[in-house]
Image (spheres, rainbow, N blue to C red):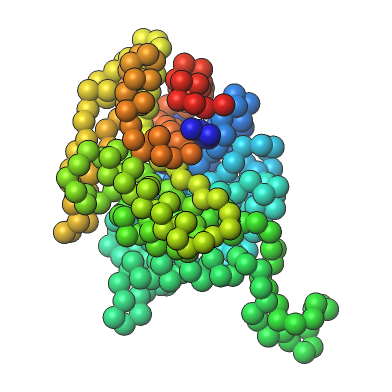
Length: 340
């Protein structure tokens, strides 16, 4: 395990037990959390993107702010729903955020998952072409985004521009060299993992995936990762791919931990439906004393196959407690998994 980061959904609610009562609370605490996570040596700060929900939704202002206040930590998403995105405008936003951070952006994108409203991307002005699905729309937008990230000129310049142009066709600015190789695809199935490898994207695999064999979650996810790596090798890309998996993992080191998460360690994988006709398998949470946690995680095949582990965090409990949660993993569990 080379890298460990956190993944925040950025929830907020006017609930007495929450530290995040408003969107402003969540945004500002997300910045503070990333800064503190860098200070304890964590490798990455990643954020989920959900529209029409009391959760984080517009990633680039947040990523830029974090990039300006940190120096080393990777900054990313897990994931941006490409059904909602203008690929060209997103190239500009991503380029700016990456340059502000000094090339630390690790941008996770995907075709999207069920959202808070029916066909929410239509409200953003996007719709599939005739004969296409919304998944086709997401993948098409992703491919255009990847193409324009290459920095090649494609737009015919005005012969009488307001400002002087460089020669030839124009590209989108600001261009950030190397960002194209730091795009990740959130794959929910084996087929889309292979597709991501063919397109030269890194792989993000979350705490759920389509059930394709009935096997335990971590075994299905490990198989997905192996298929991805095989497809990457076959495609002949020149750089090495990266693979992340997400997990809910809590080291129980004090009574507060046991109060919050003591029962989660007894959970098991579950099966259900994230959309009509698509059965999914949901991975279990891990919560135990550090020694027991190490034994359980050593048997998680997908963690062994990945190079990056993203720890889902209870962001509503505030910065201090989340840093405690992350520090407990780094101190008591991560070294036994091969980290650092």
